[in-house]
Image 1 (tube, rainbow, N blue to C red):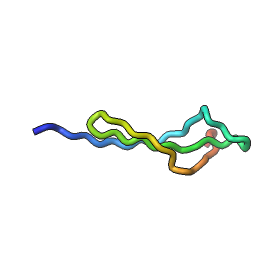
Image 2: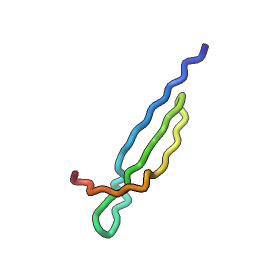
Image 3: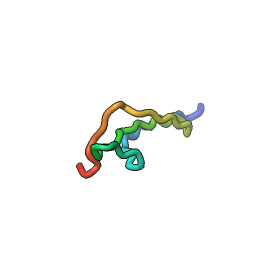
Image 4: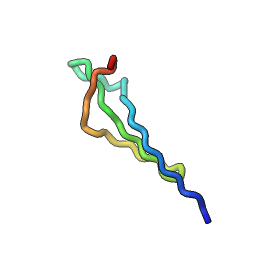
Length: 48
């Protein structure tokens, strides 16, 4: 039986700074080593 792993990671993408200084929150989902990334349509202040 093959082992299946599932991981989620939320992170901020500091290279895409908006005019107001906020950065987007990104989501990465990894299933058995295969990754998919997307934005969660939220922006936050990177200092927080």
